[in-house]
Image (tube, rainbow, N blue to C red):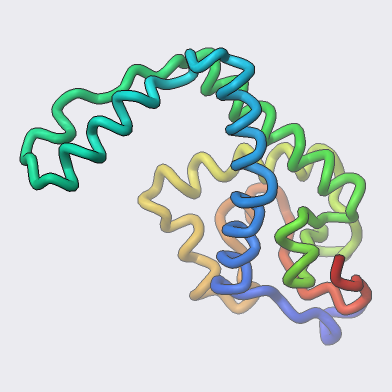
Length: 167
């Protein structure tokens, strides 16, 4: 694939892809982990109580924060990371959300399938992209090659996949 043929995926299409992945990947994993933890991952009752207090206009609604288990949170995060890497590896740089909107992750120089090292580096790169007030993600909107901080760290790019059928 030559550089002229490449069409980089911009901020909004990547946002939609991430939203779809949250629905199709992270949410099912979260539900599974919650039940696997026998409800010990977080105090869902406290969340419900906070929401009810907030909706009734109580200004102290968020004073009592729900207990969250660090171990179960870590299990959730590692599970999502592993499932994402498996999808990238088996679907040539795509997840369900990326497949639906016809984009994929590729090596930034060769435009080929990313390596496992790149996929793990990219996934871990979400941490600084997020911790820097989201600036790592907003870079997509301002760069010509539409690369985020995690793309730069992993030497990846997100491009439209003209060859991939939907589904």
